[in-house]
Length: 283
Image (tube, rainbow, N blue to C red; front, side, top):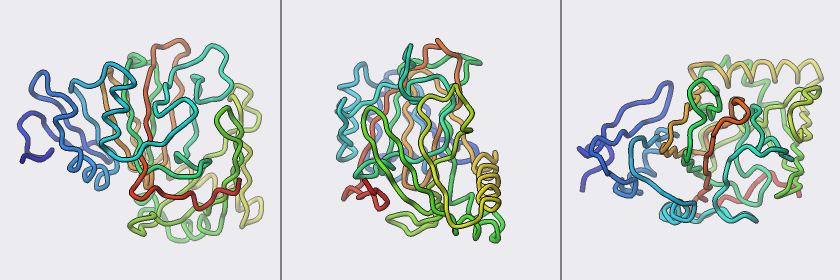
């Protein structure tokens, strides 16, 4: 059996600064033709894999059914597929056109998914923004001055977020370990400016472990490292893209986009085996 790295139906190339892209070279090649087991291994190795130019899914139901081949799906009140489309009067920044700060999925839920799968139903358009941002946190820790990392490791975040789907508190040290490999990773919900009145539904974030000046310096140095071009990949969406990501390793966010742009993504979360109980969930 061919593997994603050897099959003539697609070309494989690295993504800068991290990740892997598979570009379909034979018209009509469907996403389902890429072996899931091999694709899963690539996501664990490279943390982000893009499939571009493939035939995929005409409906949310088809998309969800495919994702079930990856494992158990996270269930929400709306089902398994989150439709990421700007709303006219959003009650949360998820459905706004604003930027979204760095965070990890599942931080407010009983279980943390291992994978995210995104389908681009319609791209926002050239120069309209809306890139999904991903930061490679092990690389951040490896390439940052150990004295700075030591300061980060002294800080714990307490995060409270209330929205339509949950009202939860979670507590996590900024520097922790990958639940399977033990590799050091970062778990951090980037704060937003309290006076940013355009940001809908600010979470309530508290950080402890250092004095106020030390906490402020941690936020400054951490944000600079997470957004360093050597660590950050901003995915510019094209209609039809499928992106698979490693939620245990990466943090992700969103660049702001032009309000009214036709940006439409679908997202499904896939649990690990066994599902990872959220170690920081308080309520």
